[in-house]
Image (cartoon, rainbow, N blue to C red; front, side, top):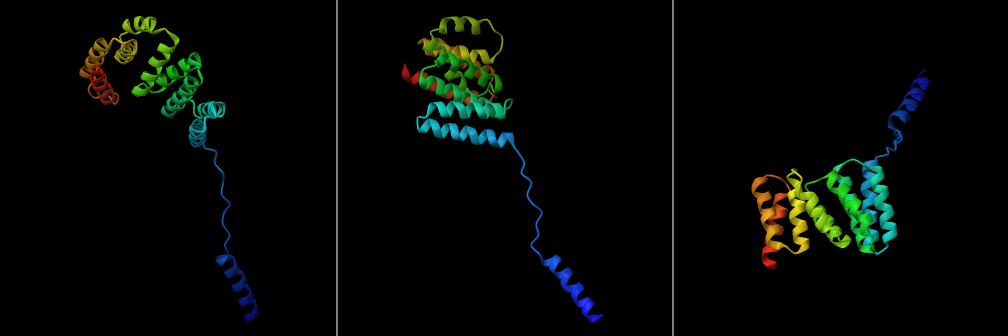
Length: 184
């Protein structure tokens, strides 16, 4: 009987002190994977492998299609298209970036640069002049700056800053106005 208790005790101690660990469950996280693909795209741009960068940005967008981070992916994709000389593709990327997150001033500058490259600044000025959305004043001001009408750009952007002082985009616009003033 004593032997039997010793054997039971040894067996139970073996199970108690064993290193058994429940196996990890792999969770697919599309948002995290999108971030990784965006970073790979940035790496490829630094290496001037633009086709690979485009593909990585497209994967990032498809993995995480409707978030604020997607605006960054669209912007990065559009910048690559501008680098390789495809402004018509860049145009839709920057428009999607602004649609996803309209409070990043860089997206507006990139879109205006694309309009300038395409030669459609005047038609876009007409389009943005007739709209009542306050953020369209931002685009209008940047378009005037790209066109070379710095005084009008400063006036429109300053008016926006006065009417919308609490938006996240306003400090960037104020810095842009300072840069425009210093170039005159």
